[in-house]
Image 1: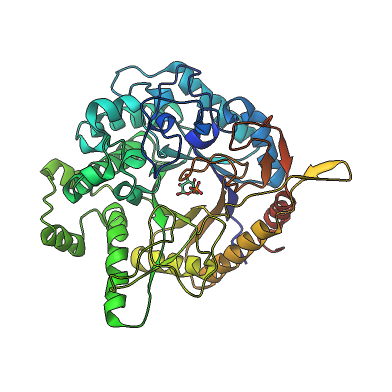
Image 2: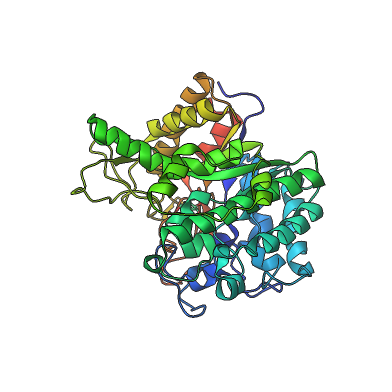
Length: 464
Ligand code: BGP
């Protein structure tokens, strides 16, 4: 049984669906120079093969798209604000009014359909200028620029937005420093010292945003956002158990700082063992005590860890791990593990006793648009199966006493993939006629999962 106030819906990111990269006064963003996705090197400038420049054209289709989501019964819709629409360069003093107006209109449409917006302040996106002139989050001045940006949007959208997330999958900065942190260097050129210093600046900026948001409105609910991926020991060998624990520590410290307000002992030990010396001022230490109201997470995969160095990591989302012999993988090699969701929710809840939101989950798969009785659709039973299994495990977590407030599927209307920048890696319940070679007329077609999710929401999770 799902609580009466449980929120169902879907989640997106500006850089993966809006397109219109040069419209409305928007400046170029780091995503505009990532034609092959977050794991690949950037290009010198935006190139036409980058599908994100047009996305799924949400910038122009948002009214119809939100209506479609309302038809599915969405109670919550997660979007991100493109920082580069509000501050095209990132370091100027005056925001771009046209960019602000776009989100005014978008939120108005959400409210017309009684849909609660949830807003990510930075989802793998920042003005490209900040990457090129400051080296992104490696530079402490980024905290000031971010503060200016969030202050503007917190004030502007007061009364229109209640739920905010600071950084999407904040733990990803260690693996995709350009996409997640605007750090304008190859990962190989960066030291651990660089990566953790940049992570520290983001953590301070996240805490500062939480502080500023709460000052602007007492109603604001501000959360952190984690790439949730549990690591299991590959074998019961205690060395593997410790290896799994250490992998988890590398992610969990982001949560500890957000929820408890200070760096936990295990990460201080890691810093010491690896000669990492983070510069932390007293003022920053105080800022970190402004902790979040809730924890949100994406969940797609789990992985294993081992002390055996001959085994190579190969599965995973942006983070990677050793394949689990008991699990099947998706077409993109992501191992599917619904029970891992129950496990992760229990872990987070037992550790922090903070409300949880699942703000991304779903299956990225190639779809085939077929015509049946004159209607074009996709029989995506595989996607329904994936979601069903995960929602079952979510219900198990609720029975365990975990306080989960909502479930949002990723990319409810097909959009561009973050890791690969392909369109063929589809998560949607609405098919978009758009292809990896840039062809397609962008028309939308409800898939079988559209009607399944509609029934599920209508029955508050009962009919699966
Ligand atoms: C998360 C990101 C999203 C999203 C999703 C699916 O890591 O927050 O932006 O894209 O994963 O990943 P992908 O698009 O790479 O399949």
